[in-house]
Image (cartoon, rainbow, N blue to C red; front, side, top):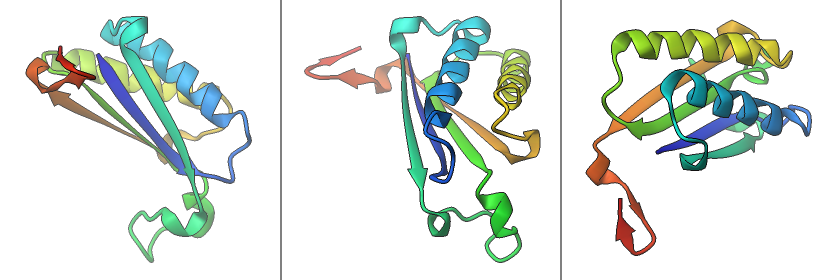
Length: 123
């Protein structure tokens, strides 16, 4: 089970969210073993003024190119597997042609299985 948030500047082209979410979904299945039907991705574009990174120190033109990927998933994967995933996801995101490696920020948030709930039932 995984929930992914992808945050980026809304100056990206219309197909950006679809391309990036497809790459993330693929890498999560291939490297982390997340089942296809248990991967939820939400993409959100923001106005330039709403994206901050080292406020005052990061050039505005770079802020327009930054993407933040936060993945919440079940705990239990090894540090080596996570490192492999970060490398593969970064490579694939750069491969879309929309991003440069230095503008990709990925964060894994691991939670215990008992911290998930869907509708009226706990998973």
